[in-house]
Amino acid sequence: MLFLQVMADGLLLGGLYASIAAGFSLVWGVLNIINLMHGSFIVLGAYLAYFANQRYGINPFLFFPVAGAALFVIGFVIQRLVLNRVIGKTVLITLTLTFGLDLVLSDLMLQAFGADYRKLVLHPSLGLLDLHLVVIPLDRLFATAASLAATCLLWILLRSTRLGRAIVAVRMDAGAASLMGVRAEAVYAVTFGIAAAMAGLSGSLLAAIFPISPLMSGAYLAKSFVICVLGGLGSVPGVIVAGLLLGMIESISSIVVGPNFSTTISFVLLLSLLFFRPNGLFGRRGFE
Amino acid sequence: MKWGTTAAGLVLFFAMLACAISGDNYLIRMATTFAMYSTLALSWNLIGGFTGYPSFATAAFFGLGAYASGVMELHGFSLLSGVVVAGFVAGFFALALGALVLHLRGHYFAIATLVVADVVREFANNAESLTGGGMGLNVPLRHGSPHSQALFYLLAMSLCAIVAIFAAKGVFKSRLGFGLRCIAQNEAAAASIGVNARAYKTAAFALSGVFPALAGAVYASWVTYIDPTDVFDVLLTIKPIVMVLIGGSSIWFGPIVGAFVFIVLEEFVWRHLLNFHTGSLGILIALLIVFLPGGLRSLIHPHNVFQRLRRARP
Image (cartoon, rainbow over all chains, first blue to last red; front, side, top):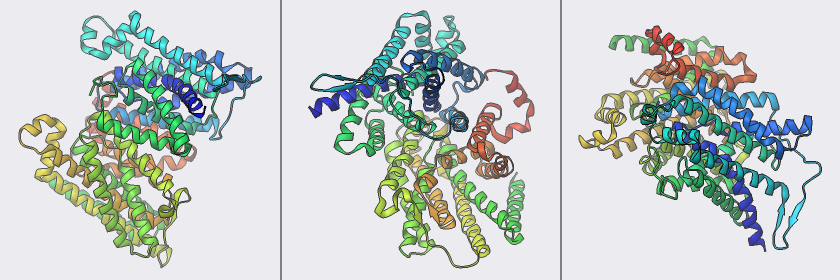
């Protein structure tokens, strides 16, 4: 009984994690940049959903593509204006730059929204799905389904559209892709935009379930790290599996050792992964 | 060049001395902060600059030192013994950590070191019986007037900086420094000409852990109250990197120049932007990396900067 419930909670959480980490993994794989702004993008998406609901009464489950579109524009512009200048530079430069940009973004959000935790409340509440063995809150189920759908859509985009093939080609070898007529710079900008869009829409979905605050960005960034290292760099199926896995691990560990240690556990997991399997659980080689 | 360095050093020394004897506690405080920043930047440069390993663990070492010394002082030991123990604790911690993470490269190394500060902070938060947890730790106050205390901490922090200066200069000019620069250029090639890369970079990483811990130990005693969010603050990691980016990493005194410029900026610009303090630091970082990637030295050839303004990509 309890075991099944814990598993169900873990899977619901893990499905959300898939879309949280997908964009982060994509940017890391294609641009070879660790985007420390990712957590703030998620929080921004969450606030967009919150205010859309507060002011205009829009349901976050309908709004999340809009948040994604807005974040796409923001990500595209940031990439074109700033990040494009450091493509191919050392890790120190790219990491410090995105750290600096994240300071700006999170400080702006702190000014605009304050540090208070807010909660989006759905009217009427969606209620529970009682399956006798397990009880599933419907809002969580919807959020997870939407998250997984968006992540699968990203996968289809990468696998079977011209744009997606161009992105994958640039990821494999930017120089060769350029020689074949792919405009690598445009691909970088679109990729970063897509990643920001994934962050924004997952933020909107999170807003429907969890309280939001600018202070949450670090936690979401950390989860993206863990999932990305767990699933292997830039691999969408890897992100889905790793997201579900992390959700299960957190859900189980919160029962076994208590919810306070969930961050510590994911960090310990990350460090031991980096030590034993730096290329991810599934052994795909990274780009280092 | 050699005389220029000496002259600059003397000017700096007398400026610090002038701050000390001016009797103005604000100036003394600034000089102390400058000494602290110099220590952090110099020690980061050992691993991040010379060796080219993007370490984000400075805050972990600083906080570890602050807590080691703070706990010692709380149990009646002197500041000096606290500082020494802090240096050893952080040094051994860095040695062990280095053995674990220095085989990683690039992004993976950066993330591993970044996460370590969080793990140590969590530990400090949870080990309440030892560290006081999130409530923080009250370090015993020293006797004496505020002014004599300010002078004392200026002296103590300057000693940390001087130790770090000698270490940085010594490493730079020694076989170790040469080996580290080889590793930065091409680790495989360095190994093939007989540089023991593993031992060298572990040594550099351990050294880069010791001096921030000394500064952290003095800091804990100086501000008399520490808590995990303060001494494990990720800004303590990022600021030294910015200083080195400003001052240049390829020469041992670059970080000191960077620390000086940084503290001037911090005092005169950000103090007027209290509500947007970290945001303006972020803007500085972005401007610096986009327009002055070689640090202040690119100002010697200003046309480079204007060229970068025009070109979207290098």
